[in-house]
Image (cartoon, rainbow, N blue to C red):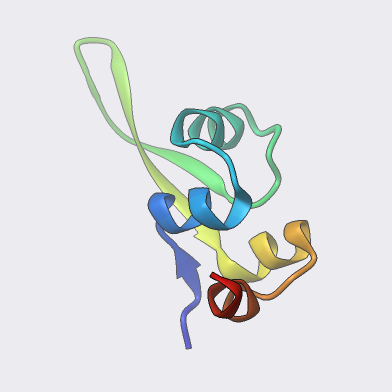
Amino acid sequence: MKLLLNVEEACSFLQMNERTLKSGLISGTLDIGSAIITKVINNKPRYKYHIPIKRAEKYMGISYEDFLKMR
């Protein structure tokens, strides 16, 4: 059973572009996961994104499996 979505899968499921998803996770305004700073290069943070499938499903009101069947 899949527990996490990667950014690409989450964008497709949540029907938003990558920039919106990442910005929402970084700012904390999108409550489906989190963005963790993994390193800083030239004063620019690099992030890793943690998107639990259960939180994304709750946000969308549909299971990820059902979403994939509809595609």
